[in-house]
Length: 264
Image (cartoon, rainbow, N blue to C red):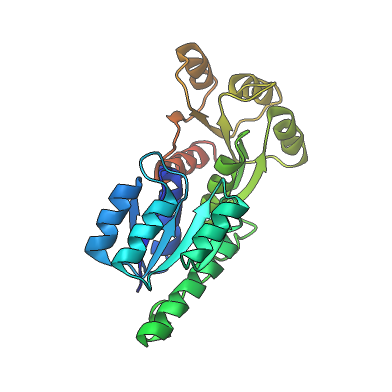
């Protein structure tokens, strides 16, 4: 078992990575700020650290510099949504194992963490079988189907990867018209939809789905509070409406409940 530290101000990233690595027997620590991450690093000395570069209190390069003062050989992988060539050069100059962009397939991240763990194994001569990671199995054809509709690529990616890892068959759409076309192709058992999207908001999309006799479960996601809009979604039979950033475990519970309530 390896101890892995995730330092990222986006809670959903931490939730996803905790779910991924915990499923393989690893202890996962999360921090939502650079200063909190450094405190955890000092106390726990994790084998591997996943580090965001853009955080409000302390940027990732500064955190990485402090980590190097604590442990010059620490295995650190950068996971960022706004990486530039200049930032990558600085990070690699400080000895990061990998420099990854957010939204990359989960398999790439798992491969990167395997690489970091194996480097740690060689340094400490620990048994390699104790820390190996594996990719999650592919969902079976009988698994419940989910459509995620959100105009934010990172939200789509995180939800898709998390739910796929949990055994669901997931498709994604970036807007309402695309979602409607995908529903025409294959009816999902559950829809997760953003309330605020350009062109067609979540309430308008759900109304259109109901007109087309869609009877599956629905979960709304929102980054703002518009009581009339949210009540309209609930009146159309949504299981729940959750605020962003979303709690991935609660999302899965809503999916389970929605699939149960709408099962034929």
